[in-house]
Length: 290
Ligand code: PMV
Image (tube, rainbow, N blue to C red; front, side, top):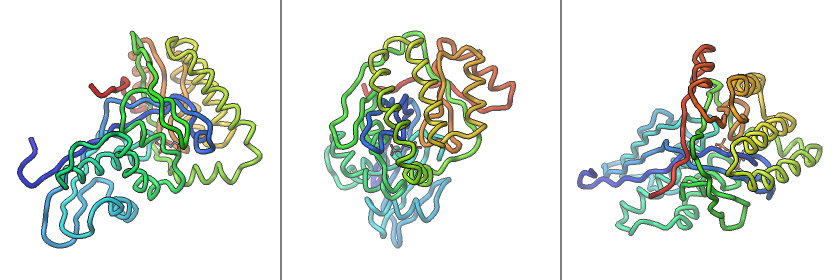
């Protein structure tokens, strides 16, 4: 229930199934929204706008001020997403904020394209040169085929008996720095970025087949390692998931820390292996707007 004078909005987190980093350079990516989200609540207050968040800092404040006024608001941010872990927490925040601001202005619910248009300046504040895949998925839900500058295409991904396990490396990666690092290593790594693009095209054909898709995910991890965004901890989590029976596993998001995504028939053996090593892990499923 929204109390009088308050407005709310929410945005979903995401996992990139394949294609991160290469997507910044015009290659495709496939990403899914997940069943974890960020909520924003706006209420009127006298004086300067106050931001209440477990992660409030100058960058957050500057990003939020792309959409809201510097005076007169109380902004409360709540998230179920691990922050800085490659699950699109900044995009989810941007989408939630845009929706809450539109509601506060008495607008009808925005369509996803308009949410995307208004949320991208916020995402740019966080990440410098974002492809837009996180915002597109957060605004739409479901599974998307995304290519920078083109309308996203909805894909059908059949979760059947399988699901994802997310394993947390325990440290954050800075997406802005990681994207800048990849840019600095070009053109030496362009062949690997092209290979990621080709792999995404190939993965699209096997979205219905967890065994074949899993192989593509693991290959994608190897290519991400080659472009310099993995870490020994992420490589170990991939090995741990594969050793516990996952069809495939890869770092998800910008890397440099963050999470590993494992595609599994049965989450329990991977969760148990993670527990036995003291690794935080949880099962999650794609989320589609009803
Ligand atoms: O780490 P995240 O959740 O912000 O994901 C970033 C995905 C990248 O492809 C690395 C960057 C982008 O803008 O697409």
